Image 1 (cartoon, rainbow, N blue to C red):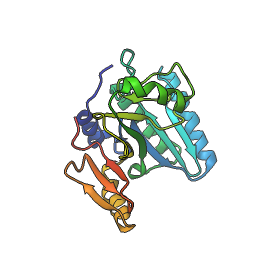
Image 2 (tube, rainbow, N blue to C red):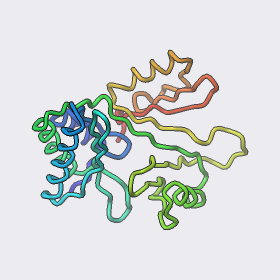
Image 3 (cartoon, one colour):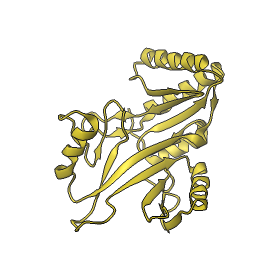
Length: 225
């Protein structure tokens, strides 16, 4: 099993995985289904294929008209979620199953939300949020991030910052999108009264502010290592 860097994953997407996009940690695809039965049959086929290959069942979300598939491997030592060559193999197999079942990939619609908290120390604040958000007092942050093992809630990333007096905005959302969708989403937000707070790191991330000054980061995998 080989862990892949962001640029390696992006190269694989460009080369042979057009249905998939790299978001914060995982490799993600979204497929449109003509009806719920066809979507459910696709989910069953993906599950059977993963089990036959000895791969952990992917995170699959069946929604009205859509199936979302998220792939990642949990590092046995650090607990980090990462993309390896196994995810690329599974992604190719899943895309083939989608064609077989009549589903259509809509890669520009993939989305991941990550909660971000400015914090001087993840060791101090992390256990509180891990227990609160996941309901498991034994769950602990993985380096700088809290993950829900069952994927019910978004991950929470602790962005290191120096101690500072309140009030200031310490929570914000990182909205991860397919690169081709980011500018359209930014333009839509600006048309609704938002402003660009900082675009010096685009296309990796662009910081927007709503009409009240609350900030959000629109993130893509481009420009990252």
